[in-house]
Length: 251
Image (tube, rainbow, N blue to C red; front, side, top):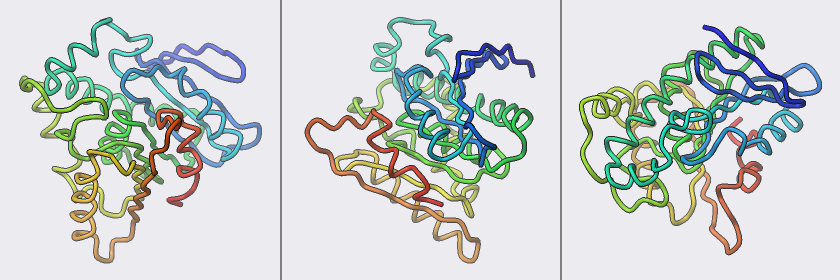
């Protein structure tokens, strides 16, 4: 595992085994580490306001990264069109590759910043990735899933349906990584789902929550669901809209 680090005060930037990272450290001794995974179409730089809130308000080492095929790893200017034409193959492959990046980032973060409480968060596709990766990372303190789903067949906001068909790689990713297929691995975890009242992925969240609770008798853990009411002029892709609900609500 290698990292080439650049300093852009107050942010730090690095390539970790070809994974582009950016992070912000608090002014005093950190209380924990939060790794935030962006939404489809976002770059890591689009989440600087969230890094600031995590570092300044929560005392966290706040880390974000570019999704597979995004930002510094972008390889196709027509990625959005490719996803619309074959959601199952293109999106599930992108999601699976991102999920497998996250344990690499968490291992590096603990080595660099110490064995602090470590949390995962994500928005949209990043929420899908954070939730899927939580079962692959030891001692996750909490998971915050904003607009994400445990069921990959529930399309992301902005997509009406899952188009196309998965190839062998995409099907393998879904079979092995989709949280809905592995609810027992989430027993005892602390998970906070944030969804909107018109969220087409809400039913999958409710089903997943029920399956975990059925398995979790006497096992501890906590699953919190917060429903945000859409209002004119409110952009839920702006982390400052949902940040107050993420901040320690599930603690």
